Image 1 (cartoon, rainbow, N blue to C red):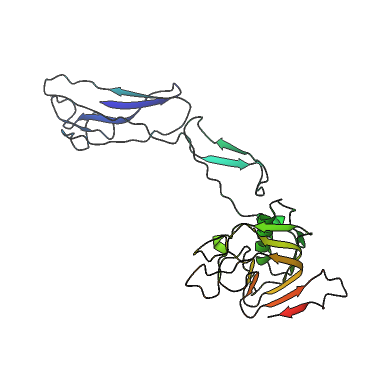
Image 2 (image 1 turned 30 degrees about the vertical axis):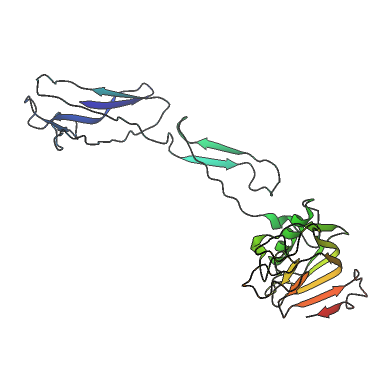
Length: 298
């Protein structure tokens, strides 16, 4: 028995052959694997139990044919059986991917990719796309809330996160707008829930938030329900953080006993100072002559 293939109508090429085990020319002998296709089997004899054999098909093209030939079974006790014939492969040798744009911003619209196979025209392919967070490339300081997105709470959260990620002094201006929060992200939890990412101190510059209103939606309860993300303060200041708040109103903050194991979750309904941060508050926007007139609390 022989198994042969050809590609795109070319010549037939044998890839598997089974022949008699003993000297060529003898008859009525058990068959085995003929590895060099000389008509004499070098491999072990076939048995009544199915054994899996495989061979590679080199080359490539558009159309593959397989031919199986069984011959010279001329006696009553000579037989051979086969089952579960399979052709496996990915249909191409290499895959190259060309992305029209190297990166796009979040919510920046659609982009496209061209996938090119080096050989073959059929078969399945898996393309894995990796993404990186380029959000902060959109937030230059000083930053006016609402510039990147009209969702003011989300935009302010992004701005604070980006300010936390650099070592410079950063100013975030609400431009007279009101940002109304309805819940706190669970990942911002520190000494209770916080509407904004806790402001870090070590290695960071000062953060200024000015000219607007931060409020917790006035329909929300403040009853100390355990784990309730609708009960939150606005900001947590880590040790050694410097923060300035000019012309700001904080409204309806809630510091309640949301976690029995957290000591400080009932402190600082608007801003919680972890102990050694410098907080500067003023009721109006400072001009050049007024920059030192802010009040310091700690």
